[in-house]
Image (cartoon, rainbow, N blue to C red; front, side, top):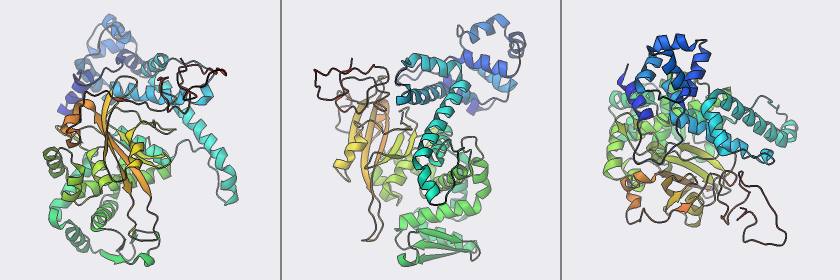
Length: 492
């Protein structure tokens, strides 16, 4: 068995001292489900695992632990992805279900959170099926809202669309923990093969294109209306808009290189169950080409060393690697190489209306799929101080604490007539990692945290004056003789 497998099993079974308590993993139920899927009796499976049937019965009843040694035997006996036994998978499934049951559709039903967790842990396949059904419901509801518009402009309506391509790609990246070693290796191979220099990265990439028989042309903005990059395969010409600064030209060159040189790899990586439609797979290829471009602009080893030396000073890193603020934040979420990991971050980007356009979580924080995030998150307050970084120590209802930073981003169109859209980006980690970040300097990490939640429906705090909806777990009561500061506050 490989060291990576052993390390993973150790991660599953080890208790992290700095991490807050998580729901106890009920691996016995998963083992029972696996046995039934393989049409094996307890006696037959016990024989293959070299244990007694009575001991196997105790494991399936969660009365004895499923040890690392037995997990390794399972991996040898079956073609098994050990990540299906990871506690965080149980947590993710249960959180998805909690969001689904938080829909107003279930207002008449009192669904205890523990019952949802029990369902996710004991019946993960059924739980995923229930959540897919909810996704289909959401898609159908959204389809009805836009059906007349689709018919009016001649487009068809796809009744089988149960998830937006962007949501599918988000699940795809999350399933890989936003780390793709093959793309990292491909980026390192380009650096070596093209003899790239960190101080001359743009001309080095231009030389690599020229050596491949490709020409790069910088075009005037009026010649490429609404376009920043366009490749013409027949002429072997890559057009880049003059509106792109040098750092963005580097990114676009590397992105196009991924499409040209590593198309087969992109196809293989996007042949994934999470990407069930052609649109999702196409968008997945774009996301992976962007990943490759970031790996070229910010090579793993050099970037990780700089990150640790400068304590995650994003502004400094943007200048050292000639990258944008958002690009650096993206790259920080990909530092998951075994033995060379960075801080596990969560990441989200919102617009001024609160719509979440990008999200990823390695910190354990929950980011809602179908509704806006809690208004107490500092990512919203970032709009009040454009261009400045805001910090926040927050606590979720489950007691887990996070240290987060947020800042606005303004799209640089390079033109007076261009629309300078403003967005806000949030980046954060568990509080135990905060001291590794320069942004925690001078901040009392033991200060009373800001109480936040995932969404109003999933947050059980009844004293919040910023509530927009009643919590799922508390019956909604109206006292016409009482006017509170917030309509939904203090419901208990």
